[in-house]
Image 1 (cartoon, rainbow over the protein chains, first blue to last red):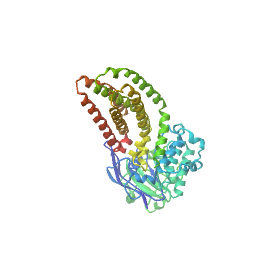
Image 2: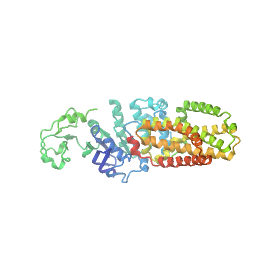
Image 3: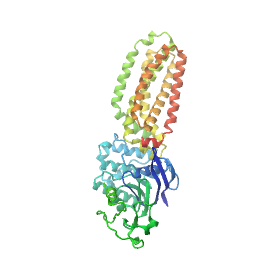
Length: 278
Length: 218
């Protein structure tokens, strides 16, 4: 079952075309990594999926229908920036979520151990928390109503490596309990690490969407044989290793040490380095 | 949704963050109350006296709204309202809950001020005083909704703040200016009533038509 279906999404803001023909298909139970550099259109896409921005063209469906406020009973959202009340205590922020969703506020305490928080942390003002702690509280707030779908915009951005691993583990656990995740990131390694499916956006266009059954490779060279995989004539091509022979691919080499994920780009390696900057 | 618990938690946190605003407002209204002094006894025309009472009430209630709306500015700058559009309750209901504490506080302060002033305006008919209080309540709710909606959707918060500030003078000086111009007192009273109702209607319209795109991009 498709949880999110985005077809040919286009959006202009103040006369600038920010998105053109963006396509995203997220199946139930997947972790979908939405990868792109800063300014590529990730946040605009997620905001349009959430109904915060109106699309100029294209179609967005969540659980098979157009987004409305009723959907948010089943959709947890974590923004790139914090949106909880900064002057309120952590517990009051979480209580507010409980009251909105009519949840027993004792549920809050079930999350403390999972998120490695202490009861004392609940009394602290939200604005007094570290960035990583704030992100954890925002995630608790999103997960309290037990949503089926979690949408996170750059959930690990600006966090230290240990906290990034914590957050990634939380997303993986959510999936293991039957949830579906759509998250954006500019960190290729991170996307590769936890996603089942990846969509790559560049300059407002989806370059490719692919299931991550095996490591992905960006390739450089003459790709006339790859016409069917060519993405609107752009510089990037992505194919799994198993298709190398099929497409007579040669000259495959890794760019930087990215574990299983190697990048090779027709437009030059500088582009790759930027994608991986964090 | 647990409505009363939501209102309670909003009120608790509003009172915490607005404690000094409360002290300041009470002091301000005490000054205003003293400034009224013996003016009512010096007025022989009951209509003018009523108009004076009515405009004082409107101006003082506006002053409370002006001060309490500062909290809303801060929340907007912290992107707190973006979350309101991704919750399973219609955003305008959540906005109304958010505003319930400051609105109620303004209503309460206006009511206390009216009761205190009642001694000085005792020569007025009670039903006229009650009518003014009700009209002021409508005005307060309307003015909160109007400014809240505009602040959420507009990029330039400073311009909204300037307008809010200038309105204090407008509410204070316009009535006496119009009186001096010789406009009939009944016309002025009716205009004030219609104006309050208009502010209320516009406020309700604006708060139920807040465009998330404008909020997110502002």
